[in-house]
Length: 105
Ligand SMILES: [Zn+2]
Image (cartoon, rainbow, N blue to C red):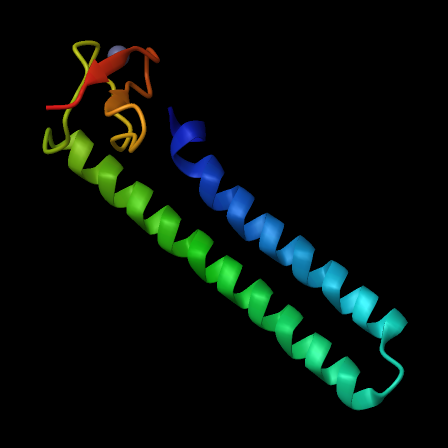
C-alpha cells in the first residue's frame, strides 16, 4: 500500500531530475554559443526543480491522506485498506490493500 501511495511521487521527481540531467548534457554537447548553453541549463534546472517540487507536493498529499486514513477520515475498504483517488474514467476506487474495486459513492 505504501509503495502505491509514494511511488508516483518518486517517479515524477526522479524522472524530472533525469530528464533535466539529459538536457544539461545534450545542451553542453550541441550548443555552440555560451548563451545557448546557458538557456539549456536554465530550462534543465527549472525542470529538475519543478519535478522535485511536484514530487514533494505529491508526497505531502499522500502523507496527508495516510494521516486522515489512520484517523478514519478517509473512505475505507471492508478490509480496512485505504481507497485510491476516484478514477475519472472508471468511476471506481481501488483498495490499496486488497486491490478490489469499489463503486464511487
Ligand atoms: Zn481492501
